Amino acid sequence: MFNKIRNKVKKKQSEDIAESQEVEKNESASEDKKGKKSASKKSSKLDQLKEQLEEKETELSELKDKYLRIFAEFDNYKKRTMKEKMDFMRNASQDVLADLLPVLDDFDRAKQSADSEDTDEVFPQGVTLVFNKLGNVMRSKGVVPMETNGEVFDAELHEAITKIPAPSEDMKGKIIDTITKGYYLNDKIIRHAKVVVGE
View (cartoon, helix red, strand yellow):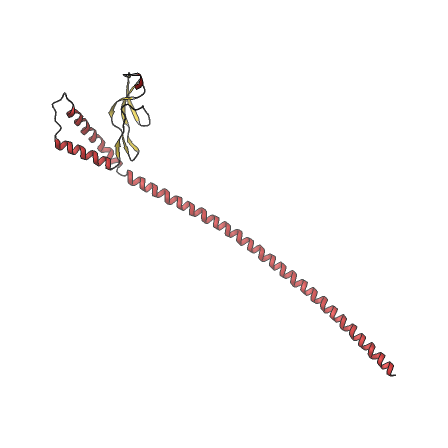
């Protein structure tokens, strides 16, 4: 009888052990399933975060590119307006100075006439001072006369009044005489020279 009881106890223990092993297997299988589910959830969340990060990086690079373009455009605008402003300031007095050129021409002709040997006209010292002062003021404002006599005729700079036979072969196509001087204002032509060209 003792053996029967012992056998029953052993049988009961082995059943309990088998049952506990079965429970452990089931628990570990369910934990594996849960682990796999949570791992797959974690990996899908990680993938979503990576996609969002890539989108934000793309958006950031586009915004940086736009910013650089706008900054470059603004910098070019500033430079252009500054240059226009400087040109405007340099040439603001162009009309007044151009209107004074005939006065300068008349002074120049009067001086040449007085300096000529076949005339009795005198160019008074006071008028000479005024003539020199006017010339200095014009030069200080950027007005410079063109050098024309003996130069090659250039339609961009000179206006041909007439053509005459050249006194020598090397004077063909060159300026023989200047009727009216041409002038530059800060390297910009404000009046073309009226000239006689040799042919």
